Image 1: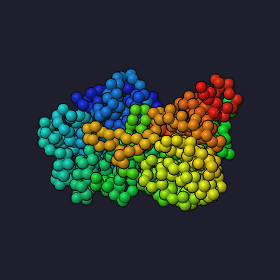
Image 2: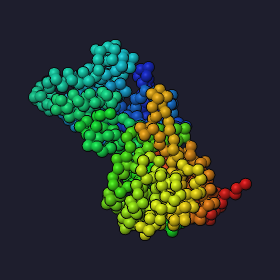
Image 3: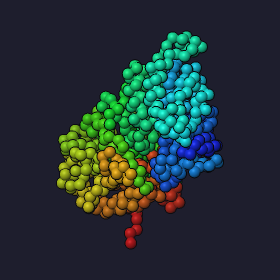
Image 4: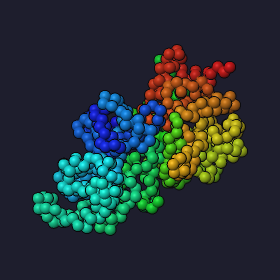
Length: 269
Length: 303
């Protein structure tokens, strides 16, 4: 059950030159209903009719943190919010990740990185062995890596130009992980040293998700992906955010997703 | 306290606020925010004889004070509606208006029979969807075709029939008179206005279908004008809509001649928009000292 309410900005931080983090005082009701991979739909000023869907990066008892980059007028308006400002927030919305696996590789590309922190934290808190593979354009776009390092067993970073981590795409890290990483230690109570197949959870550009899904399929590993589409109501009533499924049907990112099993998705353009 | 009850072609609404087809699904989603019994009526998502997956995405583009959509009548089909959605809707004390689109007059007739038997309160015949190739808009832009569809819908229905008009015509009163002449019990307007937006960087239209239908506050003055014109041309009651987001907007539509008013796109910005508009309209009516909200209908004083 989502909630629509006016929330106060408790903290406004710039994570780098491009990414903004807002911590919103949403109250216990909204925070308690949140699970990883969900999003909030935020009204960005009176002149813009539609809300903007922003994924939830992390949360605690009464607050949610969202991280976004400026993509248009709505997010530009949002980036100018200061501590104490009020925002009209609708959420939490959508069907998120299922972090119940024992061993998880979270994969984030660019602005797809923030929601994966929520997944990593939730899975780690539930006792899973969590690894992270994060891709950024360059050093200037890097964010949240300290927080991933805190809750993940391992973390690898890669960038388009090699200015942070090695040069390449995050899908290479996924390939390598699936190929090379046995279950790392005997202290992993859930598998006692025996190899446990990981579940891969990913958020990022469509091309990246397609490549991650392909790698997972090749290794016979379950893959959950978070999709994006231009959205209207955010709750499943207006039916605009359609995404094509492998079986020929069209589901909706806001209500059926944003997270889907990669096998369900039609990856052809 | 102003009496908010209105009559729409014999269908008694507890208040004049309706939610229009395509903005409210089958009520399940917004039913999480308020009791659907608060509304006068629900026009359900447009139904077709068979299930439809609709158009490819992107299906929405934001515009100054509005949106373009090109959903393309995605729906589970009339049979699934009757089996799975109507029983849920019936748990609420609200009138149910089934919106239908067909490719042929016979398809409209077949759906009217099924829906009348299933016990909806009213049927809204969509002859104005701008987002499908066959049927839809073709029926809505030619008076003789609009009349033909209206006639068969009337013949096949045991409940009142309302016809939803397209604004994408030179003279909307011509179509209004044609459907009234063919037996329509009520008229709803406006459907969306055809529009287009282009991404100047990619040189691609934002909508995958290139064009779509415009709704939201941007269309309000066009819609009010058309309701006023139609109200002066026909005697049947009118369900007015187009960009209503506050009580004063709803009052404008009623003054122009609408018996009831639909609140659609506004829900995307504010999930409580329909009940808020109702409350604001009631407060306005109270302030105006009206005994009945229906006194507003057609009460504009033109120069």
